[in-house]
Every structure is written in C-alpha cells, then in structure tokens.
Length: 371
Image 1 (tube, rainbow, N blue to C red):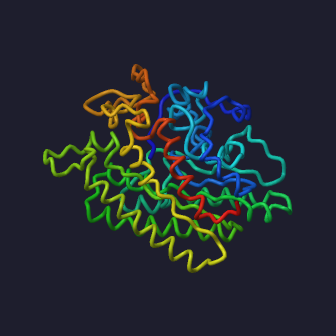
Image 2 (cartoon, rainbow, N blue to C red):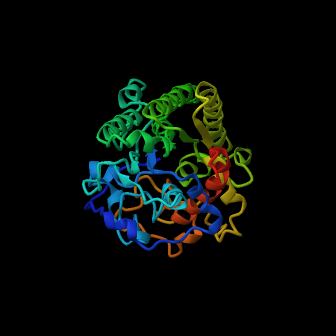
C-alpha cells in the first residue's frame, strides 16, 4: 500500500536506534521470551524502514511530514513508528535497518535486516505488466527482496546458520499493492479474483524460500480490511447504503480482502503440514485493524475522524490522489494520535502501535516459544 513521489533529501542514520519513542505497555514485551537473535522483514510500505527512499530519494516518504514523530523522515510511511518497530521492541531487539541504507551497520554477523520496499508487489513487474498492470512506485518485488536476503546471508559469518534458526521471519504483509495497482487500472471483478491465487502462490513460494535459508519461525501476515481506507472510500462511492457495513466500510472490498486472507490461511495450513519442523503462523492484520475500529473510543481515537486522513485534503475523507500528503500546502491535522489513518493509505503511529499490540499477543502463543 504505497504511492508516488515529491521532492526531498534522504536521511537515515544509525543513531535512529537511540531516539526516544513511546514505550510499549508491559503486556506486549512477551516476544523477548522467544530469545530471537534477529528479525528479518519482507514486505511493502507497511514495513519499509528506508529502502524506497534510498532507491528513490525523490520519494515523498523522504520528506516531512512523514516521520514527524521521529524528528526526521526515515522512509517510514507514517508520522512515526510502524508495526515492525513495535515487534522489534517487544523482542528487545534494535529497530531493523533498511537493507539498502548505505549507513547500515554490518559487523559480519547476522543482525536483523528489513528488505521491505514501499510500493513493492508480490508478483514480479513483468508478470503484472503482462496483465496490463503497472507498478507506479518501484521496480522491486518480492522476488528481488528474496535475492537481497540470499545475498545478505551469503555474506554472514559461519555462525549465521545458527542465528537464522533463532530468528523471526516476517513474510509480508505483501500483495496489497498488486491489488491496489489492479484497482487503479480498472480491472474487472473477475480479473481481480483471478489475481488472488497468483499472489498467494508468490507468498507461499517466498515462505518456502526463507525456510530454505534456514528460517524456523515464520509469520505470514494477511491483508487489511481495505474497504475502511480513505483511498478506497473516496474512489468508490456507491449510493446504495447496503454497500456499507456498520462502520461505513465498503463490504465488497472487505470481502475481497477476506478472500485473499482465507486463501492465504489455507496455504499456511498446507505449509505447516509440509514443514512440520517449522513454526509458521498466520498474522491476522485484518482482525488487528478491526480491533481498533471496535474499540476506537476507549483507545483514544476520535470516532468522527476514523475514515479521514490526518495528512491530506479533499472530500469527506480528507484524501485526494491529486494532492496527497507531502505535497505543497497539504495540511496535517493537529492531533494525529486521535486519527487511525495517517495519509489515507497508511496508518498513524498510534494505530500501528495498537495493531502491533494486538498482533503480538495473538502470535506469541502460536510461536511456541519457551516462557
């Protein structure tokens, strides 16, 4: 879930690991019990910590107001931290450096690395192009990220294999952009549905690749309820009230996301059977997100702005594809912590924190770590 670019300068420094940021509540520090040596992340803008802005320093994610909570833009597509940051904090590990970051510290061992690229797709660009779908943000896809990971592990010391087995691998969220771009190019319902098995197979192949690299604990996240996001709510505006659910999310789009998720869950179950010595866990981003909607008021969110972008302008959802967050003159709301949506496509740090807390508590027992 990512889009295009404006002017800027790229900044990312290893000092970011020492920034003062909100501390997780005690009940979500449980991942430290797993004793993970490192975390490795594949995915898109939900997890990118700087790869896109290294590849393309003109990306709008390399400029304020992105990263405003962190004192500088880092390539994170939010006003602050992402879920992977909170997962790393819960495991008592440093934030993951972007693989392409030229300032990345490399000691010769295997420390956690983030291979996610904002705008990245599960399917290669040439496969999407054959379907008349273009990636408008980056040339990188899941296969490129896997090649980076292979290269990285090949440069590790001889003790790397042992460390990999004691690490956590996040394979996704990925695939959301395949659907985003397909919707953008006005693909029919039939074409959209036909795309899902291909996307899920690409994710399955990626899981098998990381298992081949030595992974023994893998989390495979699903898609968000995209019918709740301002980008879609502003583009699809059916007049029929029956098209919306009780949260005023678009039922059809959420059903599509659920179709992807159900197929992915079935695939995860198949992988568990095929690899009984590997712990493979489905990461339910859909339920994690909906837990915010269901408890918005008690979590401190303004229920009147749940479907409005904090950074944006235009229409009922404070979002316009023509004037997106980061463009000159596009305002930022005075109270981001009361908003779920940051820029109409990505979430605020506060929303990501609550999602991460839900997710951590959900996956921890399934990871079968010794307490």
